[in-house]
View 1 (cartoon, rainbow, N blue to C red):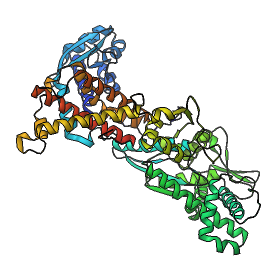
View 2: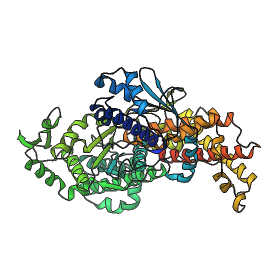
View 3: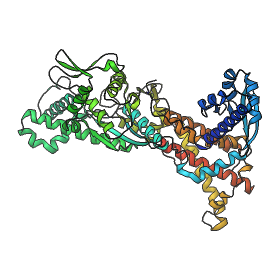
View 4: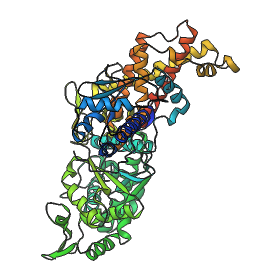
Length: 587
């Protein structure tokens, strides 16, 4: 995996499922302690179990093996010199499950402890979801640790492309997941508005501007040839044309570079905001360099003894920190490298108080990870203070073939063109359906279909269907009526013990998983897990709806099912919200 280690809290058990896992793990630990006190297990048994935390209690993958299962006996058997089933029997004999909604415990297979919960455990989940509303799924796993997520950060030399669109979806969703998991998150866009690329951009705009004046000119070598610069040149002419015609060519090209950068950055900002992505900070490389940050960073590294001179250049000894070779900081002509600028930028991040930094880079930056990790270590920060995620390439597919969408911009398909074709919701959902480090084939035809085959439509339709059911129920029961006739009041009296059908219980179980899914996706840096969960939850709901009549004539059962439907609406809306996708009431 590309992902580097990050701040992972040991406390990852959250929500109804996680809380039950923790409670059962404590009960098992108490049983082991009791058995050790009686001499039926050796004293070190409790130490072994404490080393496992609550990780030995999991939800079985196969039905019929309980609601939860513990592998504690399997882990203890060897060190305790007991057969696994014998160790399991000892633990079960000392289990005190009073106060826990456990119907029974079975020793199964080679020594698993399978816990079967009473139906009442699930009934409380519905009320909890409806009471917590938008807060359901949030936790304090992150404990307020400050985390910066820097993503997109495209060069301001051209329009955003589809890879940038994927990075924007991944970065924004990851930031939302981290916030929901209790981290203090800041989203940042790094504007690369300094260096030779901006000089080339200015000369490229100048060439297009001169074309508008009727002159035949060539785009300078290494310049930018995209036709989007014609629009920039026209805008420049309208704003600065008179000044430019009388200006020194060098000053004119520099002015055009600054103008083009400002225009590009503003277009990036507007497009990203239309995409639902808003950054807390737009950080300028040029502004950083003007503060003398590069000189201070170089002095810091020299003071730490990590800089050496060779062939007239200054080098950073990154091999001392795991890199495959040392890297140049300042060239022999005295010009600083981009690497030094990037080190200064990251030094500034930590100076701003971030304990952890997550950079999301494009596929062409994979080879840059080692040197940047080494640089952070050379600055004296923990190696895992920096985490790098790579967002891989995207292939747009249409009619089973590579799509040809770009009308006039060459090889890069602009993000704006894709959004115009499929819309914001489909784009974000589809980009998040696979791990960011996997290549993605984006099926444009599927993204536009209004059928159950389209996963985002399928999930949104579940929310819209629920909204329709609740509207019908509200009309039938008089939502505006006072007191006991009010529909909301009546739902609070719902008897969840009446939910006994397998489709009902399966839906409640999936709802109970949501807080763990959110925390797990945040800690694993895996937004794609949330799209999978949303589809699975929608599937559980559609199956429930097809199996169980909600607006039944049985008033008590109707209220119980309506409460379940409303809880599903809450969780679907919360999941879609974290994905940055709308939850429509009608479709």
